[in-house]
Length: 136
Image (cartoon, rainbow, N blue to C red; front, side, top):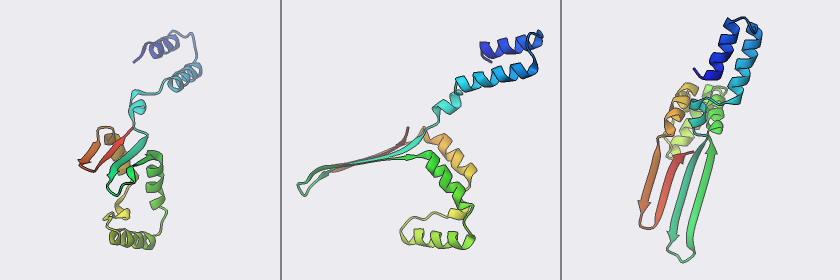
């Protein structure tokens, strides 16, 4: 417990402030400082691809930054889709080589995945290019 929070609770215990006043002070204190867990959560999934073009056009670069909020919203939207649409989408994804079953995606699972993404970094190096996937 931090010192400011302790002081507010002590003032409440001593009768110097009411419970409502203590609640307002604690809420203001919580808004003032983000929690350490929230501050460390990644906000973006980044994919960077660089390559040397052998055709003579020079090097190339792709840099994609996807907000994790967008991923969260997408998973929540799948719960609104009718089962027939999800089955059709799964079939089309399978044809495209993406073996994902959208009916199995749950918001809780995505949150667990996002919690662990800050530790994930994938680097693929080859003689003519490089791929990096990471969170920031």
